[in-house]
Picture 1 (tube, rainbow, N blue to C red):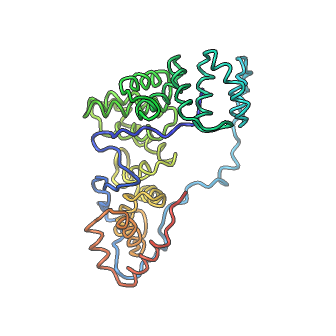
Picture 2 (cartoon, helix red, strand yellow):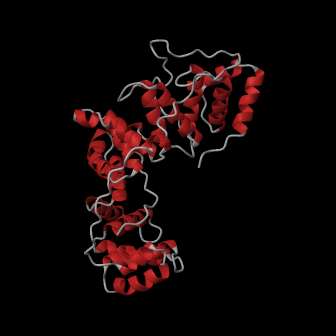
Length: 359
């Protein structure tokens, strides 16, 4: 029974592949992010007035350019011949009290899907008073009967150890079973567990199949992990190596700001595909506007070195000030900042003061 994906358990991935995008800031090690193109295409930054004429991100293909194309016909709708779950149907329509009234009798008779639905309603206070202990009870009942969604939720409850006694071994058993039964969030979390329990290359290789299954079901965190592992793991088939940038792009398009940053860096440095400074600038700018501190730092370098954009000392100062305020020092950017004019420093600070993160 599908539910809205809960907050994922985030065990750290080894080899420094994952970088925090909020809270404590840690500089991400990305080589040559501001390497100048060998052909001298970049325009040097001057301390005088910068102009953006003739430069800037490409606009891409607009929606109006696509409106003339004929769309293919929709496939015929297949008639539903299965048994209708009235409790879950009420849940989907937002009739939560009705869903509880229809699911509870079935749950009491041992129906695993109904037990999971009762647990979900209790856990979130939907139509009934929120009761996390009762929810844990029903998740446990459904997990024992093999419901993948319940096994995933109950595994998290067992790991936390607040509503029931903490039991890592039992939690791992349920998490793996849920993953093997196709739950996308469980697949991602079981992969994370494998990397934590088996440090180094062994854990990454064990985790990769679960990351791949989760990524194929649309989990952006897993898509990012697949992209990184395809990029760094040796001895993978060439066809997988060629897909690294595609997986990173899927995670970036899903709004994962760390993926947006890394995709931008890959474009700038020519990693896992050809260099494209404009696209690199666009993706890093998007991540910076979403509040990614490392992206803000890198964006300042791009404005200084005129990679993918015109040189702009005020914008460079703005992004440096924002990343420095967030706790990310950078001596080279500090030298740049101290070397520009006083009015440019002031304008950069004012722009930083007015910055608002994108939703």
